[in-house]
Image (cartoon, rainbow, N blue to C red; front, top):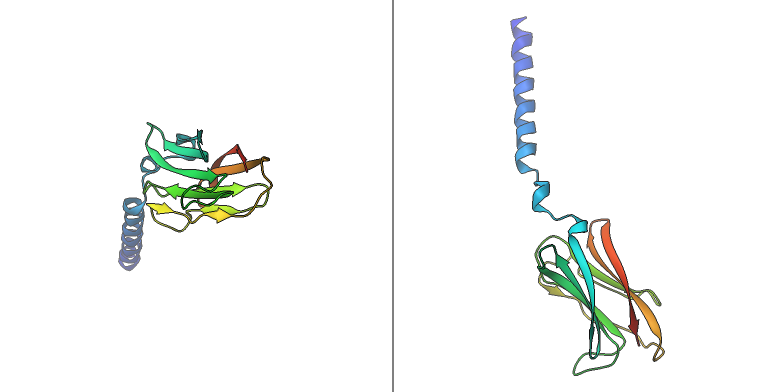
Length: 147
């Protein structure tokens, strides 16, 4: 009987250590904003459109950028995304017309994706879908852009 108690004590002690380690190393949910705490705000520019991605409290997390016409070294009919905040989230933009995508997935902040380009018919409306992403979760908005 003594022998069984000793073994049971060792097993329970080991299980307690593992459980304690799991609790200590678990990331607290309060430290990670939920996807609901982001706002996506379209803004117009002279040469295109931006969609600003803000955390609650107005902290800029990043943005998606659309350029309808070339300007300086920026190409036309082009989009890219910028992740400015090391919050564990990424930003993606997809042009629904042809499926081109700009993303910050797999990159640490601060990251600016390369321009994704392709010639489009002029003076036509297109939809750009902009998302905050993390794993399989996403929060998106669609904005109209013009070529």
